[in-house]
Length: 158
Image 1 (cartoon, rainbow, N blue to C red):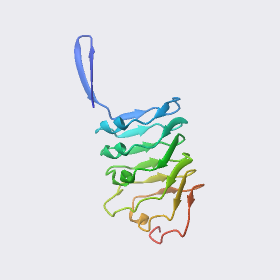
Image 2: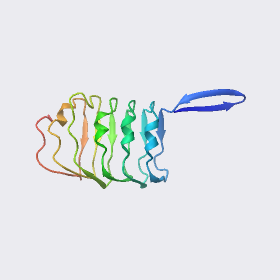
Image 3: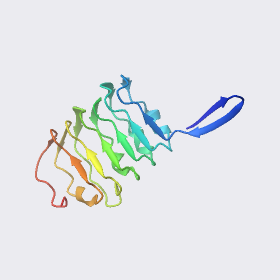
Image 4: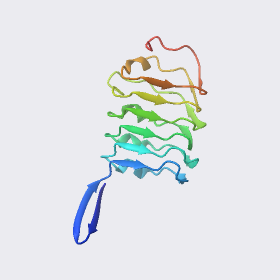
């Protein structure tokens, strides 16, 4: 998406690299057009409790995204399986979305190689952790507190 503006007779163009709207009282759903920002690096919509519905799979088209903060909203349903394919993602928080359900997908060795922080706390995500979650060697913080995961901690987490 390229934004254009005219200021004092001069034309300016730029691409959207950051959307930061926490604590803004956003109401409704996250539109699929969120995926129309190919240069987006930072998406922060946390603490908008009236933002609901499913997280659209179009977020997976944000190939340059580094930070995704969708915590403290009211998202429901399953996470799009493609979220593990975000090539430049460093930090993800889906925390405190108590209506998020389902399992985490397996993580391929070439996925999430830059991920440092993953917060899935206070969700209803469940099932076993993917056995290969430890292949994410850059992972420094994994918060699963008050979620519904079960089973043993995979040996790959060291």
